[in-house]
Image (tube, rainbow, N blue to C red; front, side):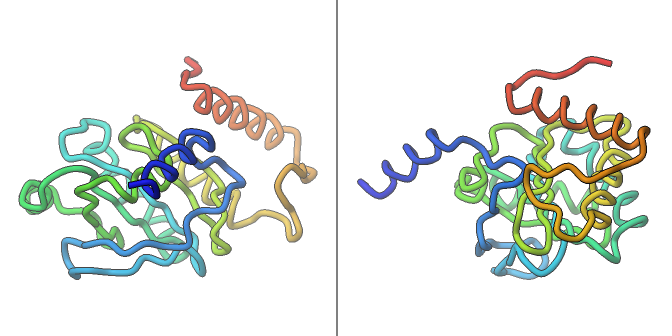
Length: 197
């Protein structure tokens, strides 16, 4: 019991994972299609998305992942983590609304993986690079979310060699404007607010 209390206190102190943080090395989890699997968070660009079948924006994201994977699926994998729902409910939902090819649907009925990332909302996705570093965190899903995710993926895939946390690479003026907007939106998300456009 002391170990659990210490981990919860640590999570409260550290808060949710943010861009630049190391992601957990990996986790074991049950999947709908493959039984128990080990998900390693290094070696390939990965989206880990925390999901619930009752969440309307989570349901919208399923079609969005179809677009993302159609455009970037050769460079990306998507792990959808359903949180705190009975496996039968999740199985029934995905029987009626199949996930796009390339999406691994997994089950986190106790919320252990959800808590290890410090996620606090549904949907929340973490974009993790091949070295296991969180490159983007985003909550919610809307009309332009798939396109925004593709832009974020492209920034990770095309980042200059040697670029590290806190360093700004030179970019064309239009890209700098987009980067500034993305930084403002990330800052707002960390504060728990939304910038209305």
